[in-house]
Length: 246
Image 1 (tube, helix red, strand yellow):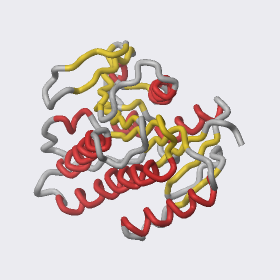
Image 2 (image 1 turned 120 degrees about the horizontal axis):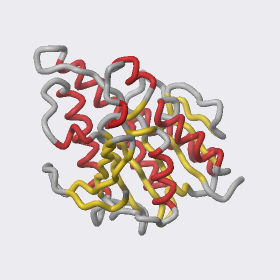
Image 3 (image 1 turned 90 degrees about the horizontal axis):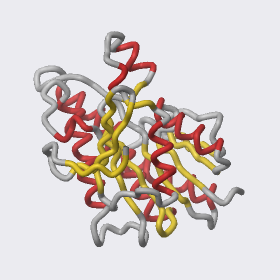
Image 4 (image 1 turned 45 degrees about the horizontal axis):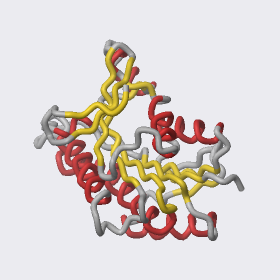
């Protein structure tokens, strides 16, 4: 086995697939956790879609233990998620439940994986959303779920969270990722303000190597303008930020 190992939760999605391909090309051992396998991954864990939150966690932990044996992970990337529009009169509870399952369940299971398999000084990256720093009245279930991921990120980065020694937990907060689905849904969008998918694994790899790595618990906003992406740490729910990398 190679010396570096990574898990991508949601490796069949647009962002997850790009992350798997990026790290495979860098000769990492990469595992995918998703509802369907990723042919590029070294190991696939298929999550039973009808299982409960706890059952999904137990299944993932058991399968991963079998794959890793006594090895540890250098990084865990949770790229799982989804988007559903709707306010309180548009299938509110149904939408909120779906968003919770697609974002909060995988993020919390990724955290459980980290407590058992992430190496000291390893990286756990969760996926939040810049929009969820404020109100999302036209997508309330989505905003609720992503805000929960933000809270989880900050809690995991704090003392006594149970995370491995010297590990780093970060939350990636894109505004709009440049995916095929987004282009189909918003063909007249301003693509110059959409963050390229390839930017994310490049950024994660730099942090794994210790380059400009933010403090644990940080929420990292990705702001793209004129095809250039700026990385900033969100301090509060307002727009006061510190630039850490251009």
